Length: 158
Length: 406
Image 1 (cartoon, chains in turn brown, cyan):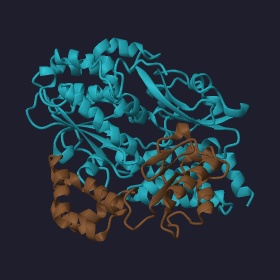
Image 2: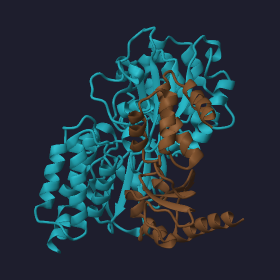
Image 3: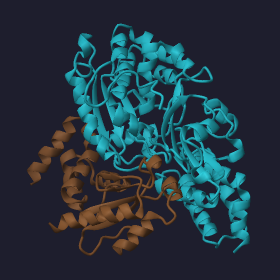
């Protein structure tokens, strides 16, 4: 496991003139693999890239897309910036929060969903918008949100 | 959308064109740079800095390493132009980068893509591979002896990384905190080496300039200076979307003709003309030419060209509150005036909107805006203070009403 991680990160580092540039890609890799960036993972990255642990922790905690604790399998990221909230009477965040029974930053008891309030997703022309993991959803209505969440639930039952 | 800049590339799967690159490789690098300088091209990310001048800050005729970075960290609320260039015409961007690299002598380029654009991170490398396969990128481009490589670097969620020195820090695996300047990236950029950073749209203007000449680019604007402009139009309009119009088109025309007017036949109340960080305009201020100089003269900015249209139902204090929350969240935290100032402004606006404001709160917000102005390392300070102060100045009665009704 450790050796495998070392190989992967070293390969990431080969892409760059200086290997420190591989830090953010390495942290993203850990998050993809484990669902979040663990302390243990950060320590391994520090050793492999020969960087101080403090440097790795400070970078990891700076970026809002890196999760330092376990999240739901599906992270619902809802834009709450100006345009997305201009165009919905009742904010989407509140609606999804109510329908899943969790608040922003929480995970559903079944571990399936978590909700995050995020900054502008570059979809202002197609507002309101959200991402679920890497998928993007635009021109949302309460109905379409129900449908999207419902179909994820259904796919998880199979 | 008028296809002026997207000259002849079919985008994505089939490659044709790259005519401007072929022409470039038959010219001397300094001739290419001179054409860009004469075109009057100004940075399309928001700053509007003259591109030709930025190139002159780099070492000239140097044999040392020069890096080229494309800023695709599009995060300015109200803006979605770079995303569409990369989605629909990635080869236009690649071609622009190769031309610029040839002119300034760069061998390695990076596209710093915002983390949220995951779907673009999937296919941009495919477009790069296509260009490499066709000999338009990589070793010995089109047999010219010139080599240039592009790699995509994905961010991980940070607004301030759109600032070029923060972006460089991020690319070096650090938190995205802007650097004190000087030195500028032109001499001390990525890994301390000379670095040229341009926005996606800036690079994408270059092929047109080379192919059709600087005068044709100037003539594409209605002011005779500076080509076309991509406008991201959002909010309460009938046809939100991305529109390419001559630089200098009137804001009224963009709202009422391009974007089809106000939704539901309502009255226009206000417009943010160039992304959330640019000062707001009242409905009676929209007969204005959308170019860098005219908007500066009316104390706002062209910025990223992200036009946010608001109808009569919108509460400006609520917009100010959302904006303040955004800036307080995204402040990188290294300059006290910005870190503490944005947090204070957010707190004051929150309590005003919630009906718990104190009489002095409004003046306090204005004072904080003045303190932040000019006392921070990067332009983020202005990006917070100017738009919030403008909302209060122009719609003061709405804020005062919140204090009276409590």
